[in-house]
Length: 199
Image (cartoon, rainbow, N blue to C red; front, side, top):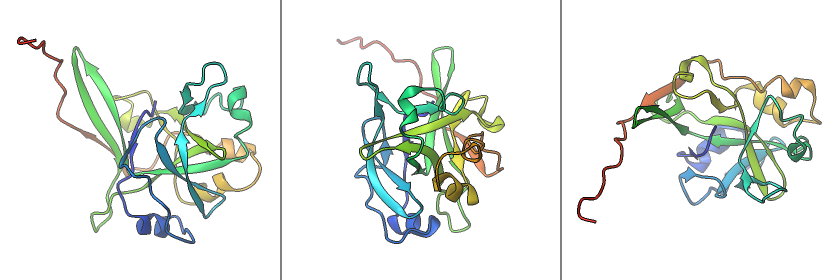
């Protein structure tokens, strides 16, 4: 499950990578969490900000992930399938528990030769106000950390995902990322919280 991600790049680099007609308006934060504004790219060259998380009809809580395996079955997503988007990100964290210690891993794409971070294109669904990220089973190189990951589109798959009415071709793109430029970087472990002896 993806519950936060970072977008740490320039608007001009985004415009260059995704062949946008103009530089996008960026969110005013580097790390995005559910209910924050997220940058979306849709219908090829259009961009905008959307609240990350679709309000659930049953309790209003944000549904910020949609499982690829059931996105065609869940009524909450059916109205969004024709409004597909990508959500750009430069990394997302996942945690692995080892007893009481939590290990954080940053998942990203390998930087280019100039040191610029790789930009991932998460497959998403949106309306005029909200967006959600589609997830799938984890790629083998990160499966030891977490069992799921966002669907990451690359190359021509981006334009295919954004184009036309939903078809089986679109749904076939919702698979684990297979390129070898996916990096899983372990950070310093987070020890269990210690009681405050002076409280």
